[in-house]
Amino acid sequence: MKVIEVRSISKAYGDNLVLDEVSLEVRRGETIAIIGPSGSGKSTLLRCMNRLEEVDSGEIFIDGEPITGRGGRRLDQVRRRMGMVFQQFNLFPHLTVAGNITLAPVSLRMMRPDAARERARELLRQVGLEEKLDSWPDQLSGGQKQRVAIARALAMDPEVMLFDEPTSALDPEMVGEVLRVMRDLSEAGMTMLVVSHELAFVRQAATRVLFMDAGKLAVDLPPAELFDNPPNQRIRDFLDAVQQKDAV
Amino acid sequence: MTADGPHHELPGHSVSDATGVSRRPSRAGAGAALSGGAWTRFSRSPWFNPLVVTLLVGAGVVYFFMTGGGPRARLERLAEVYLTQDRWRWLLSGLGSTLVLTLIAAVTGVMIGLVLSVIRMAWRAGAPIALLNLFAETYVTVVRGTPVTVQLMIIYFGLFADLPVSRVLAAGLAFGINSGAYVAEIFRAGIESVDGGQMEAARSLGLPYLLAMRKVVLPQAFRNVLPTLVNEFITLLKETAVAGYIAVEDLTREANNIRTKTFDIGPLYVTALIYLVLVLLLTLLLRRVERKLREGDRSQVNI
Ligand SMILES: Nc1ncnc2c1ncn2[C@@H]1O[C@H](COP(=O)(O)OP(=O)(O)OP(=O)(O)O)[C@@H](O)[C@H]1O
Ligand SMILES: [Mg+2]
Image (cartoon, rainbow over all chains, first blue to last red; front, side, top):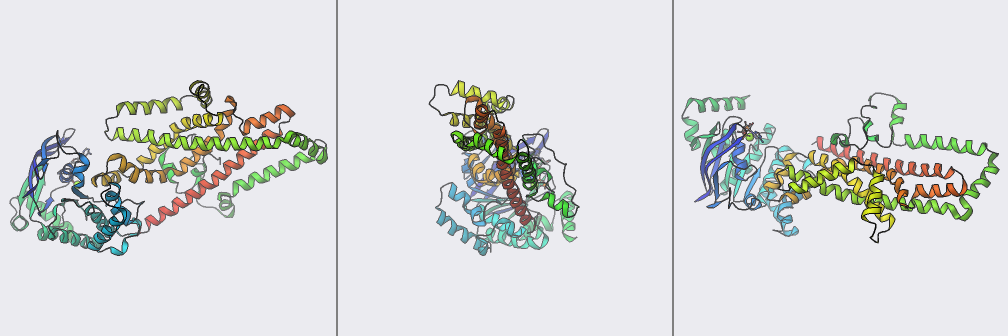
């Protein structure tokens, strides 16, 4: 069943065409990895999906409802159905971990404070950080921050989770703990779009891999196929470069 | 060092500098070699200024009693100036008015500044509020481009002329309206100092713009501009001295009342001293705030 349908969206910054007629369907429970060179439009694609950026043309549907253009659903409603995890975590430094997680559900009056706190505890258990409920963000390591950020996004019960390079700001020894949480989430059936160059994770968790190149979706293949048998030289070079970077 | 810019000499400069907004031209870079011995350290302590002031005032008092006929004649004169008609109470009630005035102005100014700055930021973020934004910009330009005394008189004799508003309240609101323009600039810089990822994270959770502003961005912006804000209050306190133009019996005006009755300018010195003490107290508060903030910053660095 289709959760998201992206129909031929384009987006330019000035003369720079960043998304060029991108189309995509995401079925429920899929984990889609997005890879590609820097500047190819991966972040922009995710940001257009939850409308942190507006598309210039094309349409996006969630459960068949248009979220872009005229007649699109209200912005905040759209965003509540999609959780987003950022490279820089973006935890709120003036709130505790519990405060970070409960802020949206409580201030949008979707949950009472005590219920939200219990839910926060539950989500923290899920990401392995239950004891950090009352810690402050600046007391956490990078990996812990990112796991809290994931819990925070999950607190809105999103249908889809968007991850934009969630581990690339982390020290290497912390990458694993975050990827483990993401893999659990994926196995539990969450629909996920993940921009990540952690190829081992992609191979293991992704149902499909999209290769973006200069604003176009160049390839859309299951990971095993793509990695074992890269369809062209450009992708082979890219994968080699990523693996080399991992090796050092 | 002046009371307007004490934070500029803090090494590793404070957050308030980062905002780049200061009502008076800053004297940044004036202080600051980190090296130095006991004297340098002492001269940087928060008690240095109060101490110097106390010594100077003490010397002044000694000089006062040793001249003009000696201590006895001086004491008699003091009794005549301050005790007749209980005139010392005039100063006290004047001080009360000045404090109430400043408080009303500070609160009004912060509220106006908050609204104006959010309007301008929301406009910049793409909200369809061209007219509101035009109003906010015009407000800031006009208020900052005209003397506060003229504003005070226009507001009191013009806008409030037929309203049953007490002079102190009217003056408080007038100074608040004035201060609001400066506070708006302070807050705008503060909001800009908060990382853009904060707003994006809040919006991605589905918070509407204003709610995200209130719950996520403003608390952090406020923390960043606290020192600058205390500076604004210091300026405000001193500026209220012109409230006498609309016959508010504030500290300055009461001192002048005593002067006209007694032909003695002593009360003006006393008044100057009272302002100075108030400003120094606020400066101490400012130092405290800055120290707290720096400690906070440090704990953020050492994860
Ligand atoms: N707000 C913006 N204004 C102007 N240009 C932008 C903006 N955001 C992104 N771009 C440009 O759009 C292009 C695609 O950016 P995007 O961030 O989507 O790439 P990416 O694939 O995520 O790259 P990376 O791997 O470096 O994160 C880049 O050329 C970038 O410079
Ligand atoms: Mg990116």
